[in-house]
Length: 424
Image (cartoon, rainbow, N blue to C red; front, side):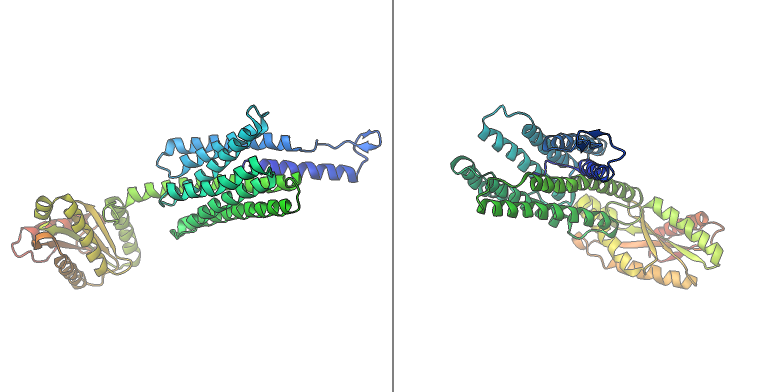
């Protein structure tokens, strides 16, 4: 089954075959042994391949666990470790001499392999934030596989038809995993998701081909698939499994890094840039303004009437208001103009370039009008106070302009008419 993971195995097999072929072609360097030439490397038989695959499975399981332990927030890695462990245990039972009855041994190995593939499908769903496969679909799938499997095990013994059933079920589960990975994602993650989806689809196709070959073999009354074909299909599927496992670890680490960057630079409630990112962009605006000679404006914004809404209707209502206000202001701004939430109900907008103070004042008036149009519980009064600072007119540095805009905003708040105040 997929138990035969084989990146190293495949390399070793190719290397051994190439070395033996080369030595057979040039028998001179080799030492003769009777009438034949001894190969440089011994040929790989099924038992050797199984042992190598088991070792690779155990190493991959350990690597997945070590990748998951320090990053327990990584979705799907724990399930992937369970999948590899289950397949490794099934491989171990197939290698060891059967201590159970032959029937029980075959059922247990197949069950462990099937559980491993189910864990792979569930791991991919967890990784893509999709709901797990429910108990009812899994029960139906297990039942549809168990009935013919046991019939061809206990009534009419046919290893080829048993492999047909098992490979077909595995192919269906891996096709679901590939479909889950193909769902739309952000461009930065798509370059990892698409290869993973292709690998899972290739595994599904390989196992589907194996199921068809076993069905053809059973129709010709041959007990089982030829060992060479069986080993080739197993190594092919296993080679892809190693790539999928590595890809899952890489993709999980990439998502964790992006999530950490998003938490560091963006406000989780409104998805706007936070104070840290706003300060970086402020300094960038100052540098660009000094180089180009084009001024920029800082609009310091503070909501009016937000506290009564938060106190009367709760924090959930307050959070909704903040999200609605953020969306309303963002619709006013043009692409390239930054809106950031710097704390509580305070925002700043960076406008670069700005060609006149009047332009900044008009934009502030549009923002105030957009906020007044936000619906709130109880129809309480909701407005916004704004202070405007222009670089370099209102300060020699970006920090000076920000302080002037902040001071102007507080002066505005103190005025009864909440009129717009521009820093002098």
